[in-house]
Image (cartoon, rainbow, N blue to C red; front, side, top):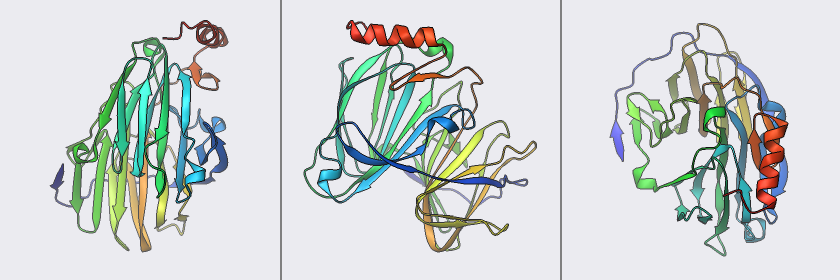
Length: 291
């Protein structure tokens, strides 16, 4: 779903990079090797986002065991596959396969048990999983799930720039998914060497980028290399971010959202607002009442 838009300057007071974050190598599921980029200590700073995992390997042993049945309650998961194939099944009766360029958006709501298992035995598997919090009033809503094949992810191009709009809006192009309360923007941006791109954003949103190929450079002298997250300062009056690729070009995801400003109580795969709600989630799971 591709379109071409004119290169228009949209940002007059861009945000500065506040700091760079190095992800933590870890494993999850049944031993899948990944890098946890957005960790719990950053949840308040990057509200409404709770976690970002980046994974990528040519070695089947790093991913083949996948993520067998496990529970979630109280938030949404957004899986974006750069390369590879993964099968989703859940206790609400949803099933689908995410493949190269595709997105899976799942609202756990009151509770769901799901699995994510590779549909390949060799080759590269690379992508991201982002956790997006739900407002307190929505945490116990019914589970929801949507598969978005690569061909249905809106795209547009400018000179030296290609943008895939997974959520929100960019340069007049509406993303595949919209959310009312958190207003997430999720872009996959490909920049040719030296190319520039600007994204308008409210100064109330929290914003970060994660570079997965090449590097970004800024006029301040800051460089964001591959496998680094850059958090942007919440500068009052700012109207977006301005990005420029280095000599090798850059590929990155840009993620922004409106903070919920609500308490966050997390125990593993459960994210609620109070410890009492967490204890109830665990009891519901243990007694088979999560879904």
